[in-house]
Length: 107
Image 1 (cartoon, rainbow, N blue to C red):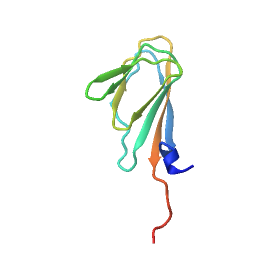
Image 2 (image 1 turned 90 degrees about the vertical axis):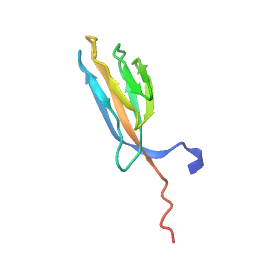
Image 3 (image 1 turned 180 degrees about the vertical axis):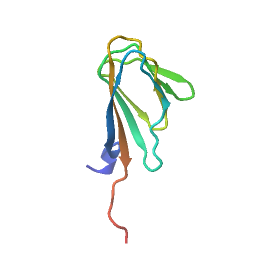
């Protein structure tokens, strides 16, 4: 595949499940790394009433819906409001590390 045929070269460098019980929450945070840049993602594995909030000059709430995938840059602050449902809120989160194609040693 030629570099012009793809959006980004890279790989999923980390992934994890988040399981929120009633009253569990996540404070605002980002996924920045001092060396690498990431494209971050959330896959909602359950429906829920507790929104994920993204902060980009103002607050943007995203309602979790089973099967929905959210992709965002690593420098976007985000959090999860306190989970109010009796059923667990489950997500799969990941960081996709963007890479440049290696063209060998320059002479």
